[in-house]
Image 1 (cartoon, rainbow, N blue to C red):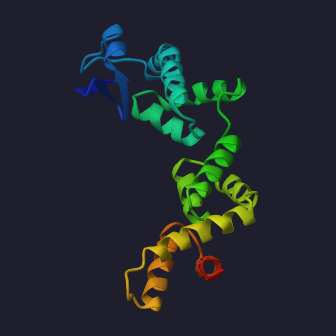
Image 2: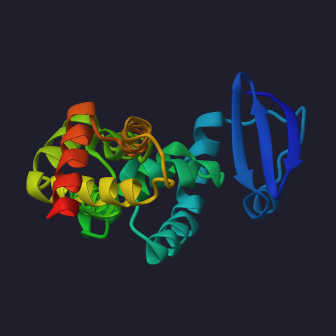
Amino acid sequence: MEVTDVRTIRRKVTLTIGTETLTVSCALYRERPIQPGEDIDLEEYEQWLLLHQYKPAMDYALTLLSARAYARGELHSRLTRAGYRPQTADMVLYKLEKIGVMDDEEFARAWAESRMRAGLGKSRIAQELRRKGIEQGLITRTLENLSAEDQAEEAVRMAARGLRRAKAGEDPRKTEQRVLAMLARRGYRYDEAKAAIEAAREEEED
């Protein structure tokens, strides 16, 4: 198959081979340089890339995981954006899951609990987990396992903070609308936000 284009952009080399476009690191390209007009066996070249990318891809993944936890889909995206082939990323992630370094279920649970403690509601947490690449079924199960009591307490805490920020002489209805909007942005349903405001007002009166 003919190589029709070779371009270097930001320390990566993009190769156009027939109808396929591959991105490789400059280091790998120097190890096996390919020139426009050259005919190569695409399947054989991809197998060569797979073997030569695995170790640096694994090292890169472990470096990322040493800084913080990643969901599978999120880490896969980071690897492919770094120039590693999707097949290489799949092999790395499979190994990480086998040795217990990466676990989407544990990641989703820890992320959801952390974000709930930060005052976010379930719909906002669900959006974040989807962006992390967590599949919907796991998101649903994770949110179902969150403590409803803890969730309600966080909503009341956020509502109380919003109410305390009311300006002197501000119309209570305007204050409530502002706090409702704030809680909605944080992922709380209207009924949850309304109940939180009422509970916060009751606590203040007590």
